Amino acid sequence: MNEIIKAMKERRSIRKFKPDMPPKMDIEQIVDAGLYAANGMGKQAVITVAVTNKALRDRLAEANRKIGGWQEGFDPFYGAPVILIVLADKNWRNRVYDGSLVMGNMMLAAHSLELGSIWIHRAKEEFEQDKWKKLLSDIGVSGEWEGIGHCAVGYFEGDLPDAAKRKDGRVYWVE
Image (cartoon, rainbow, N blue to C red; front, side, top):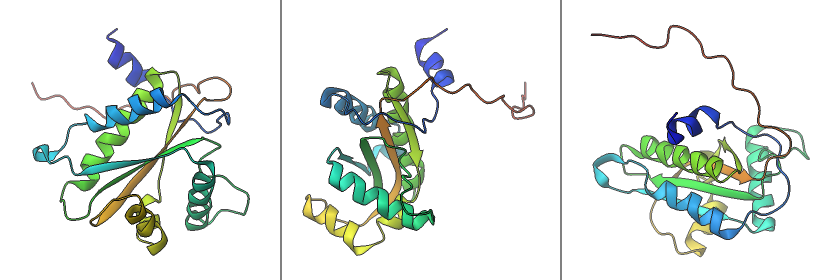
């Protein structure tokens, strides 16, 4: 089987990560894979904020937990030490599609490097808040950005989960 298709079939969302930080070179490769995602009209209107700072990662997790309505102490990033925040230009009509392709590329890249990943929502709600807009400004990002998702990345603890059975009736042929 083709290696790319094999990776697509084997990749799983991971919900239990080890605290160990992956090598920066691996994180860079994952982010780079996101930069090569297909995008509408070649606009490249998606950015990624790579968070490896534990204190900031924990602040993001707490903000995400509150938005999600979970009890105190719950980690919506499942212990992943790396959070790759995908944001798209608010004025670009294809922002959600383009950002979704970036997320997909990064999750496949993580899998190819034997790292786990999971897409965590609520980036949109986070980056509507002034404190997170200020973070973007503080790191040199200008403009209006919509949060698309968080790609939580790290070494997974335990075995890869089995694939869910694929539902029937999802493909229609017209020949």
